[in-house]
Length: 161
Ligand SMILES: [Cu+2]
Image (tube, rainbow, N blue to C red; front, side, top):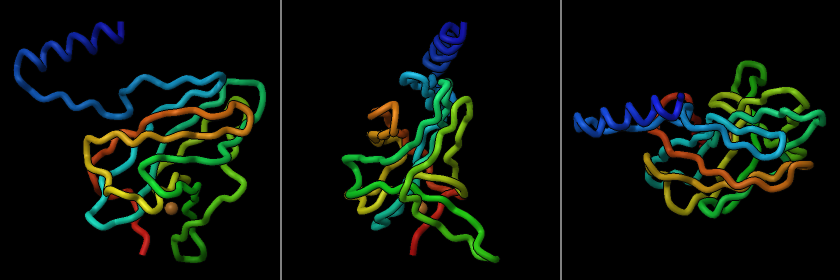
């Protein structure tokens, strides 16, 4: 039903010549064992900007806790797991060395202003419309490959100085 609707829309857009641009949130969840990934995206970077944030939602449908322990991407020298949090009156980010817990039965969101992936030493600034390949390593589920569509630069991201 959902597929049919989507196809019908695509047909309509094709017929009327309107460009179709899919939002990340509309893309089907990527399932991997008991884990389900949705809303994965990153943002376009300014020229010369060497770092950028990555965002996604992980749902753990299984009976056991898991943990996102590391992330890698051929598009970045390193990828760290970060958290934005208020320290007194200043918003700071913190590197999470042990990883991000994905408790059994819970959904964990990595979003602008909160938990996020941090792409460091990026070779080519991400451009809107690109897809960034990422390998997520979970403590129990193991390695999982996904792609993050690059959305327009804009508010909600964060820049490092
Ligand atoms: Cu960060």
